[in-house]
Image 1 (cartoon, rainbow, N blue to C red):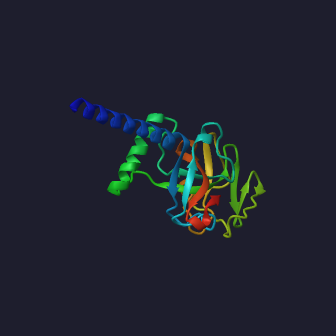
Image 2: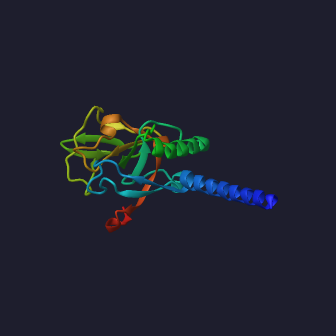
Image 3: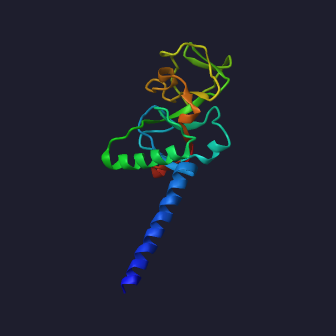
Length: 197
């Protein structure tokens, strides 16, 4: 009887360990969920929208202009797998403690490495061509960054769609590829807005 009980406990622990490994792999390499916390991407995304953030393609393909990405404002090395696991479990713990070490932001990729970005007369120019931005209703005005700016290897220029309230590359500068965790793929909540972005 005692041996049977111990065997059952060991089986449950093996199952728990297997679930933990699969969950860790999925969350660090394949996809995760993220909730929009700001209004800086309106009207494309609104506060409390829940997004599926796809990570797998980041291994093979860098973000492109127009992609909506989630990134960590304070840089950490996302290509170090042990760091990814550490971040995952720290983030899980922060849901219980209410104290998060990282600020994640959702923004749109405007410039990729090699691009020259300029902002003048309320409009964004990429490589001296005015960007047609159907996703924003606001004019775009510069902040502390000096323009034009040329993006070096591994760095991106990101803006929110709601330019009047967005804190983005105009304020904190270029974003490293190492800060970008993944691309927003679909919205899964609220139910009346489920679908691709």
